[in-house]
Structure formats: C-alpha cells, structure tokens
Length: 60
Image (cartoon, rainbow, N blue to C red; front, side):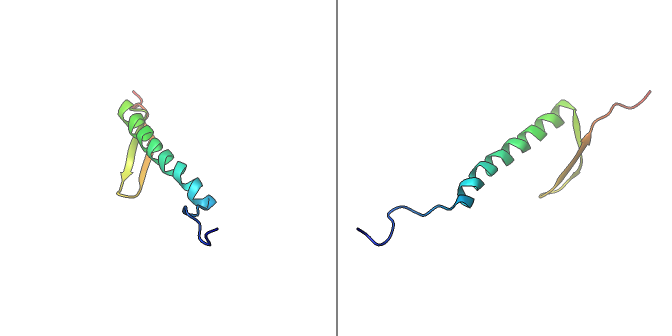
C-alpha cells in the first residue's frame, strides 16, 4: 500500500468554488442581456465593478 495518495486531495472548498465560477459567468451574461433589452442600464462601469439601475421611461 503506497503511503501517498495516487490522486490529488480535494477539499470541500474546491468543490464548492467550481459552480460559483460558472454562476458568475451566467449572471454577467444575464446582466448583459437585460441591458441589451433595455430593462436595466449601467450607471457605473469599472473593470471590477458595475452598478445597474432599472431603466424607466421619462414621464411625459
């Protein structure tokens, strides 16, 4: 019996991080889609932060 494992040891934090990455990509695509449809608009855009608000029509 070998003293070291043959495959890498994975902790629970590694397993829970992988779905988070794909959900981040999904949410960014959803925000881009909502912005394209005109439901929301970007107020502040930065390389690490974007702030959105609801797009409301101007009252006439």
